[in-house]
Image 1 (cartoon, rainbow, N blue to C red):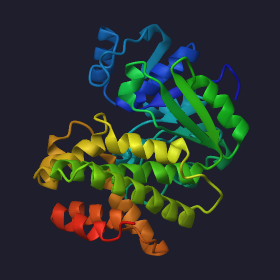
Image 2 (cartoon, rainbow, N blue to C red):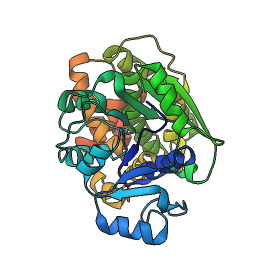
Image 3 (tube, rainbow, N blue to C red):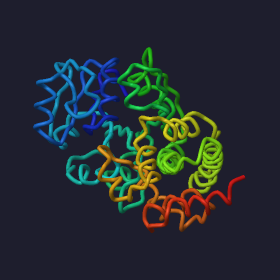
Image 4 (cartoon, rainbow, N blue to C red):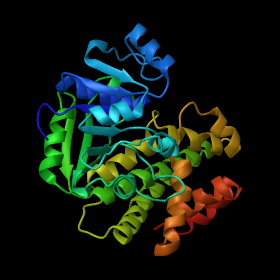
Length: 331
C-alpha cells in the first residue's frame, strides 16, 4: 500500500459515512459508491449525507461519487466495504470487474446471507482476493460517536500486520485510536455475535429484569463468544481485548445500539415483525442469530444465549420463557 493509493467507500449508511469522515481527515480524496443517484444529488447539494449522520459536513470537492459499483471498483486500489450484511450480495453481485489485485477492507458487521460465510472468505472465494490483502475493521466505535468527535477505538485486522498498520494510518486521528491484530476470523465472528447478545440485552431491558440480570447476561455472553470463536477459528487470543469484550459492552448497553433498541422493543411487547418494521436501520443481529445457529450445527458449541435469541426471533418463543431457560445456564 502506498500513500497515493485510491480508496473507495462502498455503502451509504451511517457506518459508511462515519468511516468516510475518518478517511478524509487523512486522505486528500476518496471515491464513494452509493446506489441511489438521488441520494448523491442531495448529498452534493446539502454537503452532508441526507439520510444518515446529517450533522457531519463534508467538503464534497474531495469526494468522487458514483452509483456505478463497477466504475468505483475499477478506479480504486482499496475497497472499503461498509454496507449492511443483508444487502451485501445485492451490491456485490453487480461486480463484474477483476478484484483479485485489490485490497479489500471489510467493515461489514455480519455474515453473507444464504452463504453463512465470513465476508473475507466470500471475497476470496468469489472474487479471488488474496486473503493476505483482506482487512477487517471493528470497534468499539459507534458511528454516532464518530460524528460527535468523541473518542473512538478501532481494531484493524489483517494476516499481514504491516498492511494493517499502514491502513490504520488512514483512519487514526485526534479522537480515533487504532489497534492492529492478525485475528481476522475471530474479529469477524465476534462482530456478528455481539449484535446477537445486544438483542438479548435489549430484551432484558424491555422486560425490566434489572441491572443484575444484565450483568449476568454479559459475563456469560463473553464466555459463550469465546467458546464459539475458539471452536471455529482456534488460535491464541485475549477475549477481554477491546475488539471482543469492548465492542460487546458498547453494543449491549449504548442508546446508539440499534440491536439493543430492537431487542428492547421485543421485550416491551412488540412482535418481531412489528419491531423490524419500526426500526429505521438494520438490526444485523436479527440475521446473525440465524447464521451463527446454522454454523453451530457443525461445531455444536454450548450457546444458550444464542439459542434463546434464535428461539425468540425465529420460533415465536415468548421472550420471558426463552430467557428463563437461558438463565438456568448462568454461572
